[in-house]
Image (cartoon, rainbow, N blue to C red; front, side):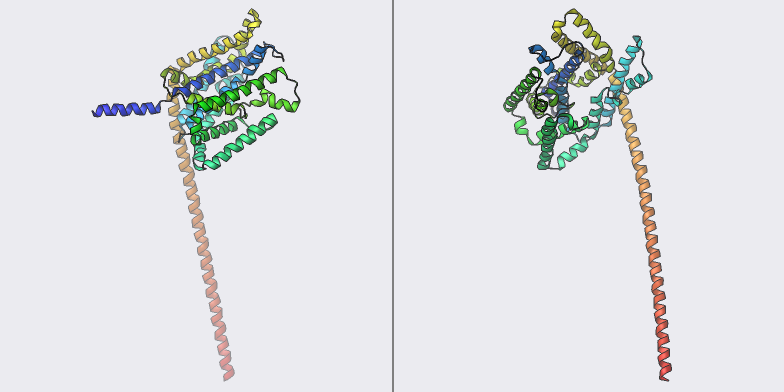
Amino acid sequence: MQTKAKTSNYNEVEKKKARFSGVELLRIIAILLICLSHSLDTSRGFVDYSPSYDFINIFVQILMASGQIGNVLFIICSAYFLVDSKKTKADKAFNLLLDSSLISIIIFSSFLIGGYSFTTEDWIRQFLPDLFEHNWFIGIYVIMYAVHPLLNTIIHNIGQKAHFTLCFAIFLFFSVVGFILSDEIAVGYLAHFFMVYFIVAYMKLYCSDFANNRKKNVKWFLIFLSIFFVGGFLDKIAPNWHPYLSRFISLDSWFTPITLSPITLPMLLFLFNIFKSFKFQNKFINYLASCSLFVYLFHENILLRTYIRPKYYEYVMGINPDLYFWWIMLCAVGMFIDGMILSVIYKETLHRLTNYLSKKLAIGFYKLRDFAFTKINKEELKFNNSSLITQENTTLNLNSQEINNNIEKDTKIDTTNLETKTQNNNKKE
């Protein structure tokens, strides 16, 4: 009986630990959209995207926003779970950086074997891809992960009204005003990550009734999606708007690397709530979602982007350029499938090594931190003690000097009084 009870309790804990697959499915869709965006980006050199009334051409140009959409969805999904986290695991941060470097080195080595030659700078960049923005998303994501407990401390201590004020100010200034002024408001990638994080946290902590209402989120998602596509078509069929008016119509004004547009950000939050409402668990979906970052690292490697993808388009466009839409889709799906296959192989092999190394690095990091912390605090303690002793000695010296001054003063007074008495006595006599 006790064994059964323990087993049932263990199963309940495991179920609580397991994530619902609705959000994980959205994470997979996000990486697929990122693959589509990168496929479209390479196609710019082979497809004529000049203004036209061709429906397919306009639709393809609107899909170029898929990468930014995928980035925001990925951050929303991550932020939703990180809000409940109380500490940073150093091994996880090291693991992301090690995986990024190792995958880059593997692809770089295959190019060397294939006869490609590179400069010394290229070697350095391939060994340290996150420092040179080859994988800008990973570098920024690691920083956000490292500081998220600090963000959570702020979120859980400022109160609902102050949190709302912060989110309202972010949305009003950087989203609405930024939408009007386009790129004249400069905000870095990391700042955008933090802004989305605070907004997702507020939605999770204080808007659960709306966030859990699937019908309302579907309705509002469809409304904003309609605005998105209508605006996109207007942008592409009438590109010669007044320069100021173009800011409101152009898709370029709707997106930054991590968009805070008043149109796209709410739309993606509604979409996230829809997928979050699907309360089912599927191990296969969850497993594929756990490989999503690896898919990003494989398919968007700078060498594949520079040398391989253009050759693909040269070949297929030579077959039939009129089928460019299907060539783009084939490239995107191919990158996603190939990336997922390589990611699964990598996760079951070399990722085990990086996972082991990252734990060792984390132990070394914590030891170094503790040593530095102890050393600095000892020096600080010595400094404080020496300051205290100096202060006490100074006080004692001042007190001694004051006592001596008082003694001298009293002595002078006594001498003066004695002389006065003597003079008085002499006068009486």
